[in-house]
Length: 287
Ligand SMILES: NC(=O)c1ccc[n+]([C@@H]2O[C@H](COP(=O)([O-])OP(=O)(O)OC[C@H]3O[C@@H](n4cnc5c(N)ncnc54)[C@H](OP(=O)(O)O)[C@@H]3O)[C@@H](O)[C@H]2O)c1
Image 1: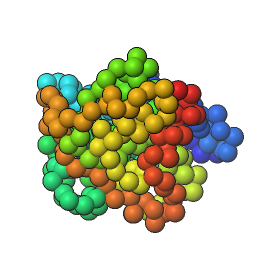
Image 2: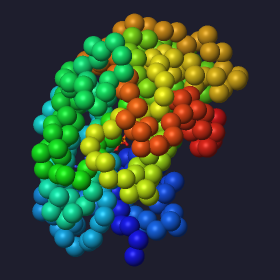
Image 3: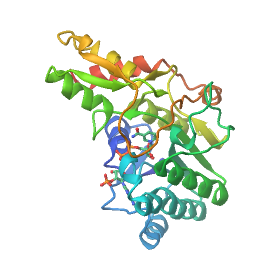
Image 4: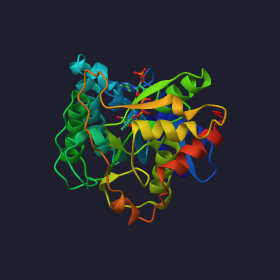
């Protein structure tokens, strides 16, 4: 008995965080974790089989093609996972009456806004990764009735490759850093996102649709790096310098802050992004 939850892409940052924080919970949730090797969401036959052989109540889709730079050259592969894979998963969920909790991105926006994006704002991705993720969103909306699309941004954790880990390893080596100061967004810890997902399932909220799932506040990548450095007292943070541009294949939105006020109405508690950064650094002993 209890609530059965399938987690796809379970060896990624978010999947591993969910496994670590909630995988062994004793609150009536039974998790099944499938890595890419165990379930390729773009394989229709494989995906359909998993859903017909099991009875899931929720599917948390952590599977994605997330290399923003590489997506500019590997366009087909990005769309295969982020659009076609999501279409396959949405069909399987719809047929099996499973609620899909899917993760999307701030990169569905063009970055020209002057104030935080609302869920209802016009989407206009400027890179292939964003385009592929938006197509995935559209498939879910076309195919399904019971879904949550959680748009998040600047995800970090103790797992995989991410900005936090890169900066910490440079700080450990006492290196000087030049960090881009011309993009504004909201860093989001995967533990914060995992907690929101857990709350959605635990409370059984059924106001389906798109939600922006980021903490409060905003910064630039430079500001993010400086905040990380504050936790490393023996590192001279003057060694971190701002730069305007960085060489990148993929164009990046210059402002991708998203309003989280719709999600707040569901009574989820949101702290400032700095709070979750501290929590991540302390909890995972990244110091
Ligand atoms: N990272 C960010 O800054 C960021 C920002 C905004 C939104 N998001 C979204 O947040 C979600 C979680 O991101 P994340 O950082 O946890 O990603 P991640 O660490 O890259 O994990 C994604 C996982 O999906 C797997 N995968 C790739 N193709 C698959 C397929 N066809 N079938 C099943 N699994 C597949 C990957 O395996 P391989 O590694 O072996 O390919 C990887 O284990 C994604 O939807 C992402 O688009 C991320």
